[in-house]
Length: 179
Image 1: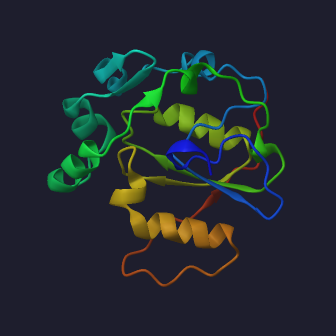
Image 2: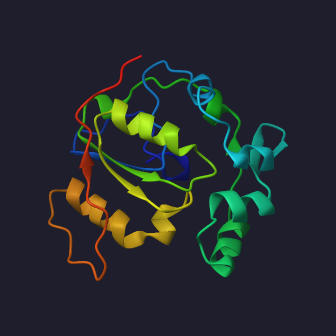
């Protein structure tokens, strides 16, 4: 895994599948910023605070846009440990798109104000991912841990546990979008 817990573009021979949770998934050589510009600008962009070669979300934007469905006390704790991200994260081009070589699963966060849900849907469809959609902010991994765990178990070929409330069923995406 790379910085901030992201796999990055590298390939790992023991990895049999990839799970994306409201995540970027650029193609080889793709300008992610140009791709994202084809979709409505997410509200969180107005809350980005820049300093030198780094940036991060303001507290207001973090709580409202990034962690909108996370309990406030937990969201404040996550904000306190938020690390800055390099400006190059959004301007660098991917050298390897691991999703082109591995089966993929994708969790779209329908209430995401950090990455536009339509962009997430586009990325999931383009990679042919088995997809679920959650009524969640960007942090569905925090606010919907059971659904994300079930998606990961599904990707690993392990039968998901029986949830107390039904998780959204994976919806296979049969068509790939090229471009």
